[in-house]
View 1 (cartoon, rainbow, N blue to C red):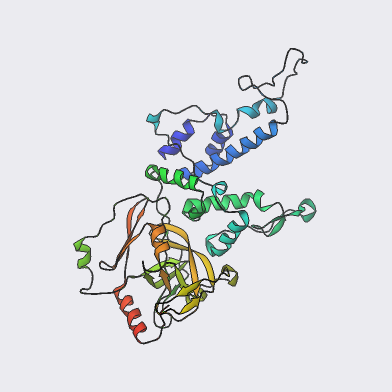
View 2 (tube, rainbow, N blue to C red; view 1 turned 90 degrees about the horizontal axis):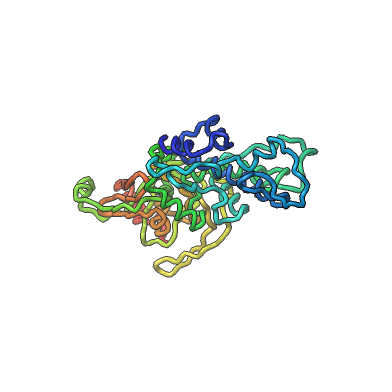
Length: 392
């Protein structure tokens, strides 16, 4: 709350942003920054509209004129107050007050188009709060303008305020950050060490169901890390003492994906892609439209080729981190529900250890750990030996 108080002290009391922050209290700094960005966009729009009219002198807030112009008439309070409103009219804060220069990303910082964004949101399922149909009568709406987010006429997708608000909320929760521009990612990463004290890990999503075993045993997983600190990751001998040894077990974990607890997920740094098997995909209750039909050939050890059904982007949760992860969907028997390969491992900045049966990854709140399940790992291995699965 100290950062929020310092921010408000840097605003003019008569400014619109100051009034809004007083009337509608913000609990976290990210909410304050979102409102500030909205105010900036409003002022920029006012400034762009003013270019077509008389220019204002920044010092006098009056239209500039030469000696041949007619005397100016007194202006109304409404006209003269516009240039002095908003967050631009704030006094500079000394560094001692702890004011943190920040640029929290919003929809304008995404590097994907609006149609691509809508496709991503549809694949995120219940994580997205979709708006209702527009309430205004059709006679009062522009039927030539279509909004994909509302699935209704009235305004364009690019102008949809509800879409901008929803994306801002998702970005604050850790979603969609992989779609940010490089500049926005760099700014966000720089802010990592200076996160306000009220910033805490995201709460785990409510789990609607559990996906247990497919053709002998396996399940889904996911991990994500956006704007993670670069902390040292190490493993100790004491951690190895908690493992059943000696062993050569694979690293099999359980994680929450699409609000489902998915078990028997293989963490495999030998895989070039993240894979979800079709049975697990179906058990998640996803709509067929969530699947992007894009076949990719997978080549097995013996040279056989298996074509994927397509790709899907799914939200995954681990230890306070939410992230959308791309999976290839494969239709074949498997003792696992999901295989998390190098893309997932690298995006997370994760370090898996089969010896210690742990996977560790950095977050803004320190190094987090997901433990492996040796019992499930051995069950999957026995299922494979029985010939109930085929190796890709």
